[in-house]
Amino acid sequence: MRRLWGHLAALLVLTSVLVVGPAGAACACSCAEPDPVENTAWADLVFVGVVVDVDRPAFSMSSGDLMTARLTVEQVRKGDAQGHVEVKTAIEGPSCGFDFVEGNRYLVYSREGQTSLCSGNQLLGAAPEVELEGDVPVAALLGGGAVVLLAALALWWVLRRRSALPAPGPTEGGAGQTDLDPAGRDEARPDGQDSA
Image (cartoon, rainbow, N blue to C red; front, side, top):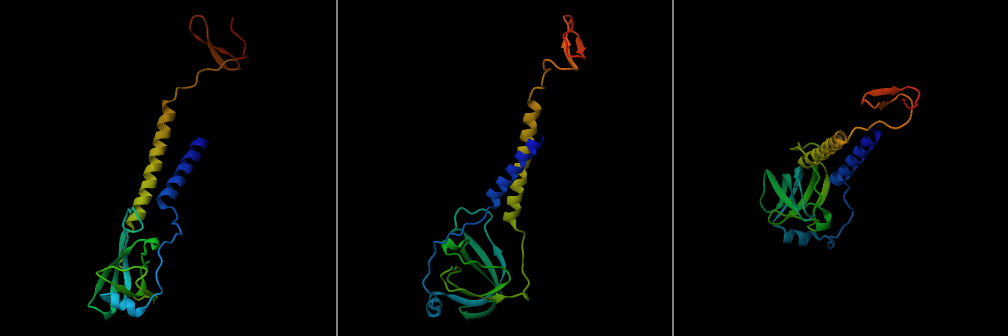
């Protein structure tokens, strides 16, 4: 039984690492030194806003998949925006995605609703006075559910295999074992000698 629990624990750890494993530290995105004049000329919307929600895809196939940051607009420097603005960016830095964090205030340069690590966005600090929208972390729930499901299936499979194994038969020699006499009846051998 101890061996069974050891296998289940190893399986649970392995699936947890695969589902929720650590992100790599690779960075393939390289940007020129930010120039506010060029960034402003490139962008069709420049504003200061606070991130109230970040919507990452539940399953992504590449670092270039897009996530959406929803910001409350505080000040517009170019373009027209009010209330809330949604800005899309790649989900990871290697694809030049900008890492928006809920509750932080940013100066954002965007064009056609998109921005990147190279756009010149700036973190201006935390904004604890702004209420976050905060939604259910779908990816974390799905990952946790997958781990629990895999562990339950593994346990079911192991228990099913154990119940399908034939019961061990009597062993030869030793006190307290039984033998069949010529008539087919069980006869106890308390001293371990053959019955005659």
